[in-house]
Length: 122
Ligand SMILES: [Zn+2]
Image 1 (cartoon, protein in one colour):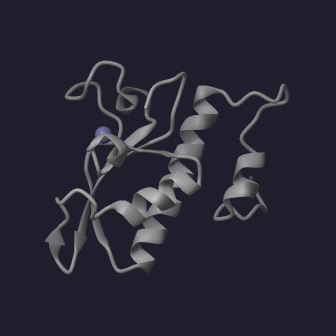
Image 2: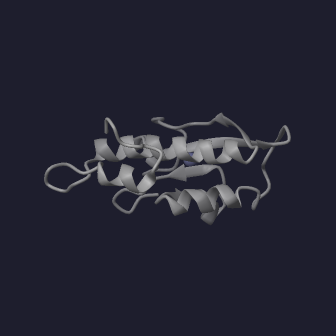
């Protein structure tokens, strides 16, 4: 990745496969981290404040959760100092996340959940 512009999603994507053209789980986890950086940058540029909720964890989520595979994060987002808890408040963040290949929990009512799908899991 040295010398690449990691904020360019398409460029980032090209470098996340091994010599066999396969993106391993480990590589996917690193791509996810970069995607989260893009999401944070996007949200910050639009005036949102954030705090981290769970990213990797071994408990407290539904069976099969991508939090257990380091492929999901819950971001607490604030607008004008107030925590955004109304369904719909996260729409532009969710749209951005999906535009870079992520899966957004807002599609099933878990607005602050951002993940990268893996083997059918979200
Ligand atoms: Zn979550």
